[in-house]
Image (tube, helix red, strand yellow):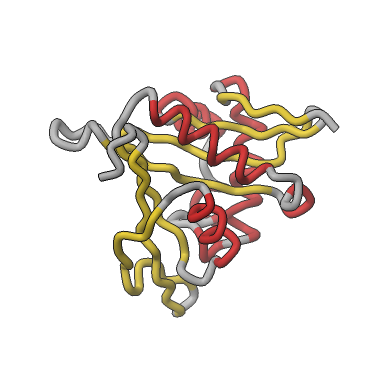
Length: 168
């Protein structure tokens, strides 16, 4: 089994689109976007996402099995922060350590560009919470009723990691 993580490029838009739509369909409670919204988007829209954010793809034996995005905040007073977003690992790769490798890759990338990496995760997503805590993220808040899907609300846990070594 050969495992590789690399930055996706606009040339990977079709691969990215397929796994992103799978993620939205499989776990609609975990994302602020929806399958219905993104399935209508043209391939050029996915190409643009791969241009405007750094999205990493995890591959096993040449097949994409996971994704995680990095987006630096662009406000003049928030450029020291970035978001880890859109994390998803296919079920069949869930026990292969792919999630941790993706998170570690985004953390290493963030350390070159920002001081702090933030993320949000659905409060009921225990595997993701364990993964992020194991990687060093700490909870700094909770947004109650952050997402609403089919009349049901989901809280999100706000987490952060200082990647500049300051610890705060």
